[in-house]
Length: 373
Image (cartoon, helix red, strand yellow):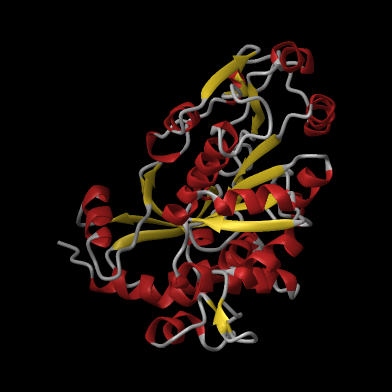
């Protein structure tokens, strides 16, 4: 599908025809999502890329391919996925990496301990039964203290020497250097991970990437082509609306306009800017039956993508005079639009880093129309 214009958006694509699987140049059926696949490959510094409906699906497809007889490049008995015990993480909604892998029919070969895994642990178990080495980035938690975990480049060197495919699940999918934002640590990016020697990476298209929910796979061309030939791939593919939203997101990155993506724009806002907004909001609600003030808060990226990054923020602190804090929170949540805050330190707090400036008027309207008795 060709790239939509910035002005057209999803409405135009949803309401009319599109060349989702039609090659306009050749006048015949074409491949779904070729434009966005090529753009993603360029963005990730990869030979090729493809898209499925989420990152869990991407991992499931990869593991199933390398452990099925039809897709295996090694011994017919190769069904083992080698993974560190310290990387058997649980993701959102209670889903666990181990359960996703087992659903593919793969046999997990757990190595090391929860806190320490070395390259020697990997080397010790590699053999005819090994289908691939899987490294899972700890994108939603961190470990400290007496720990050891081999770097991607060291594992890539081992995988090459043993001729075993090496896959890394990056989780949240950062494209920009996250350390440039205040109080945020470095998050590995697809291009630097692939340049370390990984054969395939997979990551989410939402979260830090800033697009719609989808799963992106990037890496060696022969592996991407093989994944797309899998019958299971059809069950995991995205529709035209998701592909359109993803195309728009990728185009912003490639055009050097990633700051226009909402998740990155709101991270780039300074606390001084937030305080100015807070002062304007206070002036508009000062006649309401509540105590209001500017407070401090701590924000985190959605989905626990950067667990060690606690970003300083500015809050609107409200303490109603005629109703309880719980009643205020409930009434705002049930309004139209719903306003969601949190209670802390005897105050109802609205974190302005989680509210877009264009929504300030709606916050004021919700507060002014709330029942205060």
